[in-house]
Length: 190
Length: 190
Image (cartoon, rainbow over all chains, first blue to last red; front, side, top):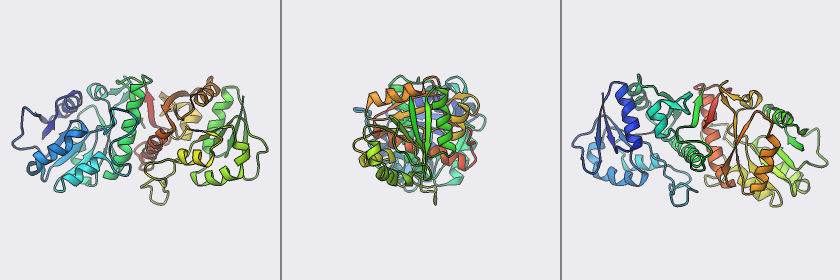
């Protein structure tokens, strides 16, 4: 199937690689390359502050689509808190901005290098945790990545994005303090 | 050194085993076995609802001690939220109840079986993430476990307990939904 990805940074490229390995056709968009139409699955591989403006700019094209939020909404000045309300998440905010779309949270607990290599720290299979309120959308997401090296687990309803973002934040602080590498992190081991 | 542990359930025993392997003397306390005096490091291996009453009962003995909170304060009726305020944590609540103690958060992101075996899923070294505002207390905690099979990483200030509890919660939901085993979980891989 077709996948649209906003953003071609480290995360966008690593995510696109996996969708490509699974046999999908990936198109990238950014400020210089605007999308006219979007695929059924759209990945927002952009920093958190860009979500609201993209949601506004592409409001019509997002209708009916699965929109995947990958952001970790850290306060990058302090590295000491998230900038979303404690009882919410970037993903839940995006769902409110896009009431006609199905928002999923995914890829925020996997560093770019682990998505590129398919391994966490060279050993554990990279596992993507996906949360969302629509089971069919989660199944479509999982099906689109079947054939990639990634393992996909269901993290529950979209409200679990709060815990996913907390986990992503914690993992980033461990890497920023050099206690783990950006090629490592939380491997999800069965 | 000496370690006091409240609670001798799966977690208390697994934690005590590691302190023992590192050469410490471990004493257990519970409702039937009250403590007269406490060691310099006290582990609260009890369910979250028991913390407040223990803090009250042993208020005098806790003064000047390092008190380790290991709880995951889930709503076990719904498995859909934590019972602490979104902008706080069980550990921060305990610190408020024990102003003359140094509270650390630890062991809440490691299932009992992974503390018993020293391995997550049989492969990754079990890593304990410890948060707290007192660096000396964290160093003492780490030193007490040196010689155990566990790896100890510094997760930052006590406010990071919020993210640790979110991570612990997320990990528990993955096990409860049988997507990972209670012998597995989030291995912290460098």
